Amino acid sequence: MDLNAIPTPAALIDVRRMQTNIRRMQEHMHALGVAFRPHAKTAKCLRVTQAQNDAGAQGITVSTLKEAEQFFAGGINDITYAVGIVPSKLPQALGLMRRGCALNILTDSVESARAIAEFGQSNKAVFDVLIEIDTDGHRSGVPPESRALPDIAAALTAGGAQVKGVLAHAGSSYDLSERAALEALAEQERALCVRAAERLRQAGYACPVVSAGSTPTAIRAVSLAGVTEMRAGVYVFFDLVMRNVGVCSMDDIALSVLTSVIGHQKDKGWAIVDAGWMAMSRDRGTARHGTDFGYGQVCSPDGAPIPGYIASGANQEHGIVSLSGGMDAKIAERFPVGSLLRILPNHACATGAQFPEYYALAEDDMEIWPRFYGW
Image (cartoon, rainbow, N blue to C red; front, side, top):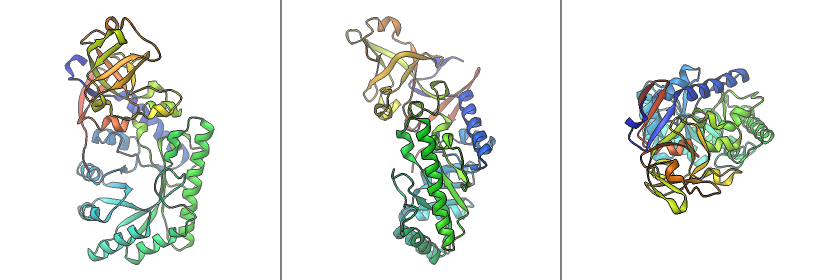
């Protein structure tokens, strides 16, 4: 396998690591007795999703309706669009349903629920709707004890829509790093999501789906009693944020960016590479953690981390490789012009989004896997 044949910068997938990550998560979900619906927004790649479903996943989660359309065209039928829908996107969702896609959509307000129901009535369509539950104050959703919860369900069913269930995402897990804290948040996510489902059932709604998950809470969950499915996305590749959160090691990270050294600033101890923030993304998620990797951890061409060296700075097309906390006066000798490096990303979702395709490396084989784009 000749990495020199790949134009840089390029996104590389270590297929062995990816398959190991998929297998471990699926086995964990099986042991906890729940279905697993992976979030496809990380890779946005049909080949990756097929590997997840081959391992036992059931359906997928997406973050855009364009993803839903592309995965449906690729043969994936069971899809949850896990972003609150706005009325202007209902025709696009209906188009998918009428082509045979089993699509779940999401709401967290009475206003949105009414719009869904009214559009469904006027188009003689029944939408399957999940109500988003806020279990940690991270982003969106309705609190499980909110008076609005049964009102949302009533607004949906009054117009003929189906209350498919509830959905939660404990995104604040990304700010944690201790196992005990992650286990506690996973239990909080589970308990509050289940409580919301119980309230809806008490109000007369079947609520068959209780969907929870983030990569950290999925990995650290001890019990998922009452949950019917879990969702997680970044686990398939992992990244440096997940390494700092404590749910993977650097050796588990399956995505990297191949880059070429294009010059030096010897007096500053810099090597200049052709992977700037247009390749790595602007995500500096590790900056708020105990270990700040700048724009990424520098590795040798075979993917082995080079201790102390990070992508410390980035412009649009230029990246800076330097010794963290020090100055390497011989950096030009260490990393000559034309040499290859790999950089592990802070946030796999954001870095993957910079590229139209992945170079999937498996032992002595290499394939190009296309990646989806758009909303």
